[in-house]
Amino acid sequence: MRIHKVHQLHKERLARSTKPFNARGANVNRCEYCQVHKDYCICEHQPNVQSNAAFLLIMFDTEVLKPSNTGKLIADLIPETHAYLWSRTEPNPEMLALLQDDSYQPFVIFPEEQIENKALVTNDIVVEEGKTPLFILLDGSWREAGRMYRKSVYLHQLPVLSFNSEHLSSYIMRKASKDHQLATAEVASLVLDLFGEKENAKHLECWFELFREHYLYSKRPVKGAERGMGLKRLVDFRTELKESNQI
Image (cartoon, rainbow, N blue to C red):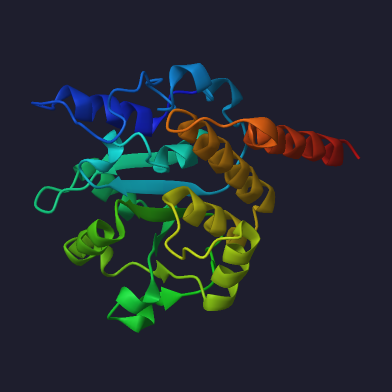
């Protein structure tokens, strides 16, 4: 299993905690990496893919401690995923250097309706030759993400990638959901799809579904045909992917 930046950030945040973080399900005996009950650990199924994209997770202080956080699923999939805690007054200097690195082309992923300067907003991903797109996700609740953007002046001159209603609606319909407030991993899946890495987008969808299913096992009993469907979908997808690549 690959240990990544979100795993490391989780450990660092725990190390400086002065008291236990009592999230819901705090008494569950969890795997320290995937954060689901140890009996349903998914680490052995962690994806192994290649990608031409990079992600930067700017995480609200307590978000990295939440077992339900899905930002870690992006880091599970995309090898070049950076993760830093957000600070209003002392942004991480390594993170600022990353944003200023000329080898990257940053895009903040954020809803257009919350951006005052509409000139920054784009619905397409156009990357200069020789650069790697750096997709920036503000990982927290919607309210926290809004505050993070407003208070982070270093983000205010960067292009903002916002999904148009057609693209978003097609994704929502595919997920058979009425909730337009997508999880962080679902937003990343949309980004990868728009970037043209459709196989990676689908892989992240399947990985998210497996995590969600196994996470819920510790909250309620799952029996019958419903149990194991997340893993079956992931295995079926990987089998189809392997067969298509051999043709």
